[in-house]
Length: 331
Image (cartoon, rainbow, N blue to C red; front, side, top):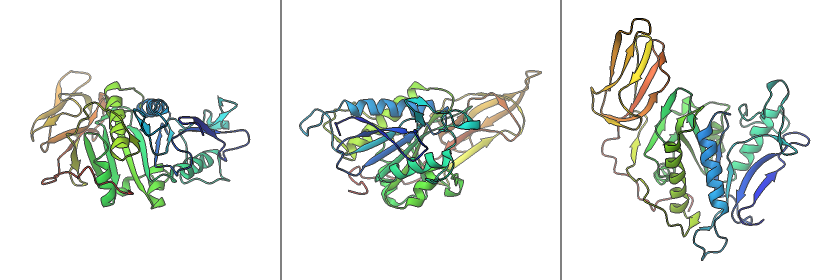
């Protein structure tokens, strides 16, 4: 395989159908890193970041003395779509390419979504590091962050090498049983991570730049890429345990307007936003931060129902001192 070549693999998704992906680096090696994004059709941030990362890695040199050398093998699914003769393939009644309906772990002899899920999982599970790049639901913005679900100590250490502002542990019971992250957890071997940034349905350039630089920093720090001269990467990392997330919900319906930016820091009692009556214009509620911390999630959809989430404040783990950057699992 030529260094940086894009390989189209004919995975078992149906006669004449292929699932393209980028296969970069030494072909004789097992994949070191697998990155998957765009599993939902409107996750444009994930698609943009991973396609841009693939283009960057394709342009690296193939010799150790090159200015930028791809030492390890990386596979990237930036926007999994089923193709026939280079065109997006229809999937019957569902329409489209089926890339918003994958079923994991899937089955080689199942429905088309099940076969697509089986193909993606079979290929990505071969890598030691597995990273799923996603977006929050439309109408909700999230600060770029690494998500962990019942992580090992190695995963906690590695997550801190991905150059994003936050690492957040989540309840593993919240994982979708048909989702890729759940299937990766079942694989057992290796390390798995979920990256979220921004909102589905939009393309937030600032978030994309943070994630792109963070992934490059990880590839450099983990030794997959060598010889890069990276610009200054944000190292103001904060780690948030499962008990350090504090949701803010509204008791009344109305129009929500935020008073704080996503990624901003607040003190307990600071105003997060207000709810107004859409008919009279009267202020119905002032919503305040329950604790001091980072605004990790913020509602961008103004229309709000009673009980609707408007924000999540992340409170840093007290006494957490970070992880030695030289500690990487699977060395």
